[in-house]
Length: 84
Figure 1 (tube, one colour):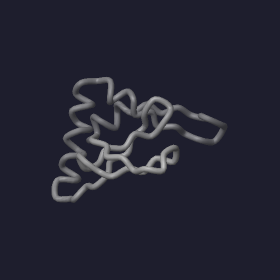
Figure 2 (cartoon, one colour; figure 1 turned 90 degrees about the horizontal axis):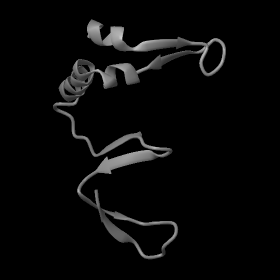
Figure 3 (cartoon, one colour; figure 1 turned 45 degrees about the vertical axis):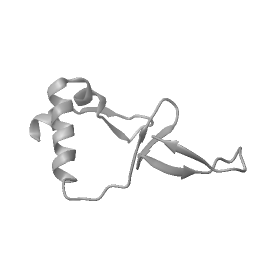
């Protein structure tokens, strides 16, 4: 865990003075760091039931959930089935 913490970059005063940003992209770019993150998440959630996983996407939040779920779109009055 300490090796992983050393990969996390600290950016002082971002986005404004007095705030310390912890940049986690550095360990995600390093193969050993990414492996450690995945293993840590797997160990932490091994016995948990996970229904939804959210993560950042290109300009939006991505969602991953059960293979088929009924999704109602605001642009359509008729719900549709989506497989993700």
